[in-house]
Amino acid sequence: MSSEPEPWERTLIVNRNSPLPLYYQLKEILKAKIEGGKLKPHERLPSETELVQLFQVSRMTVRQALVELENEGFIRRRQGQGTFVAEPKLRQGLLRLTSFTEDMEARGLRPGARVLAVEVLSGEEELVRRLKAAPDEQFVRLERVRLADAEPMALEISFLRRKFCPGIEEIDFTDRSLYETLRSRYGIYLGWAEQTLEVKLADDYEADVLKVKKGLPMWRMERLTYLEDRATAVEYVCSTYRGDRYKLYTELEVRGR
Ligand code: 16G
Image 1 (cartoon, rainbow, N blue to C red):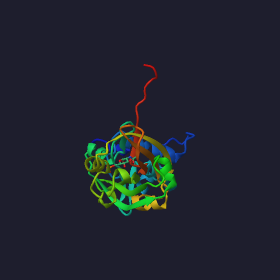
Image 2 (cartoon, rainbow, N blue to C red; image 1 turned 120 degrees about the horizontal axis):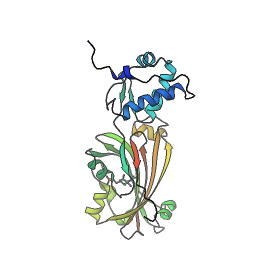
Image 3 (cartoon, protein in one colour; image 1 turned 180 degrees about the vertical axis):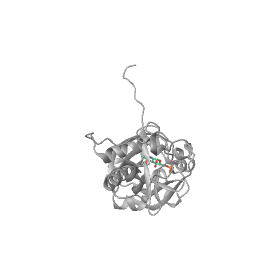
Image 4 (spheres, helix red, strand yellow; image 1 turned 90 degrees about the vertical axis):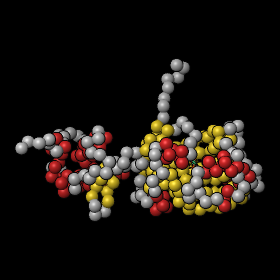
């Protein structure tokens, strides 16, 4: 009657003599199962009560481990349904100037957007300064929630110098790439960008539009995008990407080799 043991039976027991807190040990054990592929995306985790019994720890310990695993994007908890292993994070390279649409298509995901606002602005000193524009220039502000297979991934607020794309405020960007539109309709080829990255916590507004919990760690990216001359800035973007769905990737080289 002996069959393959359940993966849970082989579970490493938390070490009570370790200086590491029990919740942390439990979290690391669960994380290792997820990262090692023993627990697959969408698979259901044992309930809180079952975890209490399996690991012989308190309910508080289990809860704290689950809260942190959720904040780090390893699991999803669905009200009334249980706890499930999340999809692996999307790996976003930092070296190529790509559009959201290109990034999603390269991964086999369907790109989309929910347009929250489009407006024409003028007399914006801050934008004039950032984009090195003339003081009387107009800008188009486009605010979108970006979707991957209908799941909200990021909030993007783009400011475009209107003189390069007059009338762009009339276009519906629900199912359309901004960069592709700049190329095909306005003959604007973006060639270079500067980007900064910071960490922030989701505020009320971001939590609401991205359907995440307030306080979720987020990547905040600011991008200034230039024409191929690397001198004429066309777009300034402030984006907030979900920290639980993205990991950033870069390559490093030893100098001088
Ligand atoms: C990327 C860009 C954003 C750009 C958008 C255009 C960041 C960090 N990067 O998400 O600057 O506006 O692509 O995407 O936000 P689209 O061509 O699919 O509209």
